[in-house]
Image (tube, rainbow, N blue to C red):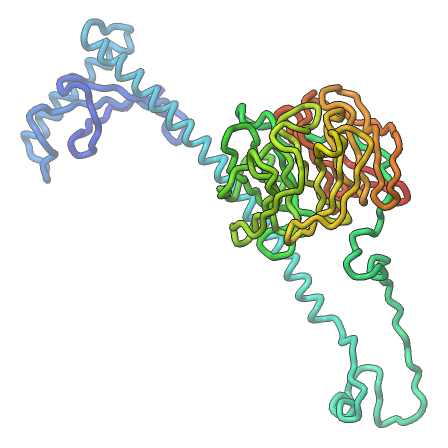
Length: 459
């Protein structure tokens, strides 16, 4: 153990001492890992350190050094009692508390550094990909050619054309594959690959909420973003416990969502009711608290752009799902667009499905089913079909009912579904990811799904 004694002028360094007539002890590791003791003695006669040194100052330093050497000897020998020993112990405890605080801050800085390193690596990968694409574009030959006479004269050196040789030249045709979705009429591209629900995978955990406000809520990714600012990787989250729910957390991607690092928090101008919200085409759609009013909040301009009272819809506990939570109006998105799942007094609690205009929120068409809303744990839409979950608490339940809006037919089904954490308060479908998103008792999870006639589910 290396023992080093240092004399420090506390007035110059701004170090706080509880008593001007006591020495304080601190210890730390030097760069080689050895333990170093540092004693600090305050000169009660000096208000500040003088600008230069003198012989008298040197004598005073030697006197204090002699005192410090005696204290060190007593400390090593296990001695030291009374006021001096108590002062040393008090100083030692203060040093330990300061050391613990510094260690905590150092660990936090290391975490921040790792986060920044991850972002830098991601940006570097993106830059490398863009560089490769740019190089590929520079090397790619021109695929289109102007066949007018003037253009032929100007482009006589184009590859494959030899204008000096007027004899027959073979014309080669290039065959290019066209995705099947391009053959579907405009406005229906998302219908490619649609089919009936065949199976649902096991839940995959992405994040667990920290506090009581996260017992239930809603989280999602936009399946069809329109602008450059937010993408399909952006994650949105609302903790739905509370009287005035207004905070919308925004995460750059699933990795930052799992780590709990939001890139921003939006404060909505009007409060949210329960877990029926969804995101679609850069807009947040949700039900206003204690009303049947639907709102469209533009995520780019961060402003409300549309509102509409859903005709005759029950609200605030009139026709919720079986778990309660004021889930009277559940908004959903699938390959066909935006939907509302709710009920009315005329329907006597049976589920009504309405397709909504994404811009104005006007009801385009409605269907009444034969299953009561409060008899199911949750519901979602896939390819224009309503599916209901039998229980929100049973660890091994089923998706037990399906209603097809294209045929107006319903049927009982039995697709296994797991509520791993036994309190599933939200289930929504994302057709771009081909996954179900759910909030199960503080846990935010996803399920892979497989549709009949579409092959394997997408990861």
